[in-house]
Length: 522
Image (tube, rainbow, N blue to C red; front, side):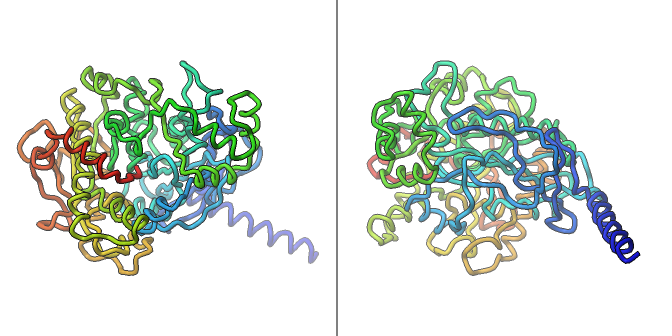
């Protein structure tokens, strides 16, 4: 009898647990099998580490396997192996994001979903986030990308963040893999696979597969733009948001450090030789490289100072982007794009700290402003103009806010990535000690609402009340200033021509940029 009572009590507890999960919608049936999530907040469900694809090292992403048992989706999956060299760590430290270690492996093609509980609106618009990190480092596990506050404060939105392969694992430029019909930009293919998985599965999480907007920052933003050019007839993505990065930057500005089209495969052979796989590009060398421990490869690339970045392959990244832009040969979906006002502050300071340990206050703003124009402001202007001239609804912004809690350095202005904690309302995750200001909280709510409004209705949302933002083709004051001192918790307006005052002398600026040699991490 005692055993029977114990069994009934246990069964009753299990039943109550299952019912609670069902009420909150924590048990979900995907195409690959059942997943069990958790509550991030009382009104927000969270599903972490969901496999969207599987891929061996330097192989194409394929559909993940089906599962016969439920997946516990309450912890982040492994990140892809990152190249965290001294400059990357310095950038993360200065930005306030920190560089805390996270589990890494080749089994890293997973994503995370934050979505309203069942009692709230279902069939929501979807924002799919692609992180930045110069295609060398990054992970969706960063606290700055947590989507809980986003979903808590806004109905009709689901947030998705993804992992994808970077550095030598994402774009090896291996001679053995050279093909005219298949790209080696595996990281960009991972992003495509994630978008397809979300389209196929997001409905069971409460998202609307017909309202997916992709957005990203820095390299993630460039990847968003690259997707639009490589998928001109796509029917999945309905809007794009680019934050501080464009494809034009990757293909039109001849700066090797940013750069990406290096036909020389010597870097591959150099690393292969370092890890004991030989310096000749043979099939055996590739087999050997696939067997080398991931962290051994990571350390070899760090020690050698070698960069493996996406290459222009005319499949995922095109050599004739300017012609394609002129022809309107890209995905015609609404675009919201912009930059921060002083993107390069953080790169200039990081470079000076790494090389001399000293920041020169008089020089830094002037150098930063040149780099910002060349690498960010002017390419963003070109991208917006391309869309607008093709008749695509296009909005442009510049983020100008400066808050003391985002970075540990008071001399940084509106620098590259300083907008991320405001977009995600994750300012409390910063490693800086100060708390958020009232203006910061207000601006975060305002910016989030704008992003959500765009995702809900990309073609019309921002042009309607309460925003009524002017499109780029309207002329006049057609650029939105976010966090300007005249309205630190909202928006003011100016003309795009004011932001682009030096872009007509871009060749001169590029020459100065190259002379300065600042290392920019997209």
